[in-house]
Image (cartoon, rainbow, N blue to C red; front, side):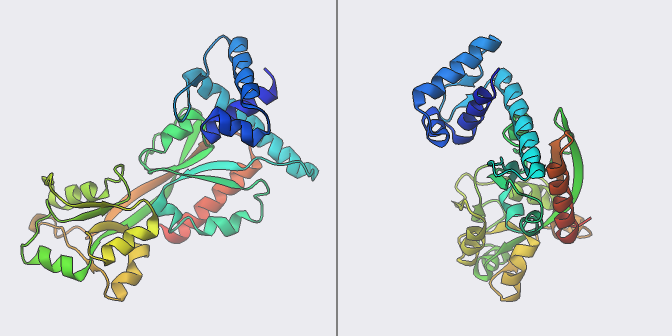
Amino acid sequence: MFPRHLDTLLAIVDEGSFDAAAASLGVSASAVSQRVKTLEAEIGRIVLRRTTPVSVTPAGEVLVQTARRMQLLEAEATMQLGSALSAVPLSVVVNADSLGTWFRPVYAMSQEFMGPGLRLRLEDERHSLRLLQRGDCMGAVTTEETPVTGCQSEFLGYHRYLAVAAPSLAAQLQDGAYGWGNLPYVRFNKKDTLEVEYLRRHRGEVQISPNRRETHVPYFDGINDAVAAGLGWAVVPESACRPHIERGEFVVLDGRLPTTKSQPNWLDVPLYWQRWKVESELLEKLTDAIHAAAAQNLHG
């Protein structure tokens, strides 16, 4: 099994197609295809599904994880030797809310040690473990405490969310023009289920109207813009919505029933850092930086 075959496999997985991988490697698409065929013939198994984008088979997952470990070791050796050879960035999966809030200090802290750089992948915190299992990343911010095979799980803290809306929309909820089941809502994408969790926590099961207006805004700052414009309510990180509340652009909604008034009017989402169990100075330093940022900005 030649290293270039594994490098080619990683390029295909990271770029999403044979043609894109060929461009990143500076070779022809036929050369990429031949390397994959050689690799599959050598191990006697199919490693890639020819889908769009391509996906890895269980055998491919094993090879992708192995290849990333090899690249990580190579990157650390490169740094220790002071070599000018290109180094491979650490691949990490983080959700949009974290990237836009508490994770930001990691950028500055990683400048001191992250010679190879970071490759951040965006995924909902409830769905990020699949990328870790597949070998697409070396670490992931997730809501899942149970570690993936070959990984360790470390508690980071609670990310606190508030239910907010523009004053005009909040008034319509207050006077009965809307109920919680049909109040227009703003979400990141279909994987975003924070309003379901908030309502279940404070009101039990709420029947969401199939005619409820929903606005999907697939970038972090756009959620606040849409809420301020009155397009709907949203469940937003406290640190991100606090300035809007202070300026009078947002009103904090209270979804609590009389029976739940004793509970705080927020939603705390537990976050964990799951990472590979490998001896890696770079991964250890990145883990320390993530814990430091979490300690500064998340609730314990």
